[in-house]
Length: 335
Image 1 (cartoon, rainbow, N blue to C red):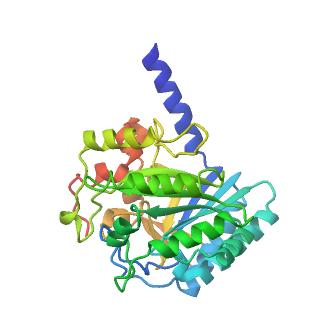
Image 2 (spheres, rainbow, N blue to C red):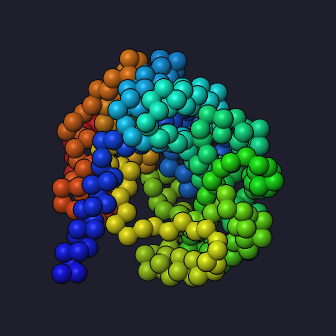
C-alpha cells in the first residue's frame, strides 16, 4: 500500500513536470567567462551568440509562449553577464511576448558568478523580468579566492560580496540563492562563511542558502579535486543543514527530484545555436540534440533526444534526477 502511494505520488509529480503547457528554456548568450574556476568543466571555445541565433531564440520564444501556461527563461554561460546586452535584448522580447500572450506566466532567472551583478545591472534585469539568481561562493575569502579566480588569476570574493551587500541594501525585487560549495577538505571552513551569510543576508527573505558538493564534471582539473564520497557528503550536508534556523530559507534537494534534462519541455540553446539537454558534457555528441534555425524552428536528432527521457519510461529515480550520469556509462559510436 505504501509503495503504491509513493509510486502514485511520483507519477503525479512527473505528470506536472512533463506538461507541454509549461516550458523551460536555458540560453547561453556566450560561453566565454571572466572566471577560471579550478573545477570548471567548460572550455570557453564558443564566443558570443550571433545576431542570427539571437533572432532564432526570439522567434522560438514567441512560438512557445503563444501555446504555454508558464515559461521560464534561464540564463547560463560561460558567464551570461559577459554578454549583458544579449541577455537584455532577448529578455525584453520575452517580457513583451508575455504582455502579448497574457495567459502565460513568464519568469526569468540566471546562474551568474555575481562579479558583474551591480545594483544598476540588477535593476535593468528586473525591468525585463529576471528576478531569480544563483550565485556560488566556495567559502570565506581565503578559500574562495583559491578556487573562484578571474581569468588573470585575481581573487573574486570581495567584488561579489560587495555586490551582494549592495543588492541587500536596495529595494530591487529579486530572489538570490547563495550556492555554497564544499569538498572533502573545505567543509569545515564553510562554517565561517555560513555565519557571515546569516549575519548579512538570511534575515532578508530575498536571500536563501544552498549547500552543494563540488563534483567531477569532466573538467581538465578533475583529477586534482578532493571530492567527498557519498556517505561523507551526506554527513557533511546534514551537519550544515542543521545550522539553519526554521525562519531562514534553505534549498534542499527534494525527494523524487527530476532534472531539467529529463524533461521533454526543457532545452538548452548554446551560443552557437546548437541544442543540448544538459549544461554539462558539452563535448559529448550525445548531448548535441539539434540546432536552432534563424526562423525559430528546430532541427532535432530524435535518436539522441529520446535517450534523455528513459527515466520517464522506467521511473528510475537515478535516471530522472541525473540522466547524464546514466548515459555517460553507456557505449556509443557517435563522434
